[in-house]
Image 1 (cartoon, helix red, strand yellow):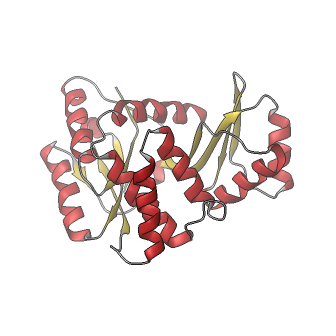
Image 2 (spheres, rainbow, N blue to C red):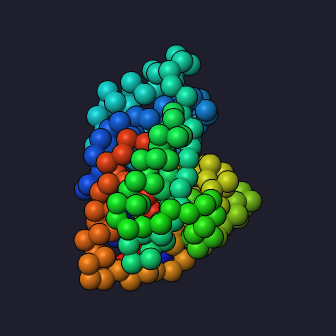
Length: 238
């Protein structure tokens, strides 16, 4: 799983600079997370992780507060998750996660990104079986055995654990995210997580070369420019 995660980090770095309207995307995700799980980050660990990630991405405090205030009010838009899968340039595998208040509009917008770059959108399940859906927690620590013991003592289901250059990376099923984070906090106090998220990790890679390199950059730019798109996962190596 480690190599796949390294590839994903490269993909994230490659696409993050092109993410237009990143503040509104974080605001929308914080609003949905707070509305569904509660506005108190101490009682909603998913929200706490999301806020921490937003701060690291330099999202202004007023954007975060506005989303939380909106969730407290209980009104506003109703956003729903939507996931689209298909084949990108060079036949790479692509998953697009969205939050939308209009699924028909969002599907049309995402499909247009596929068709304009000679790609093929598929049905649910088309490529997701070629990814691992995992919660990832990475933090500075030098005792892998102690971390693993803390997680197992708390009955956390651990998929994998890595120790590299004094940094521990824990991979768990998404359903174990909150339990794992709580177990780590209970055992080691407040940790500064370098990575704290749930994402799709490709099980392999698809090499993209030649003209497809420019095409996949255009494809990712188009997707990331859509307000409804929250995350794009792929297995392209280029």
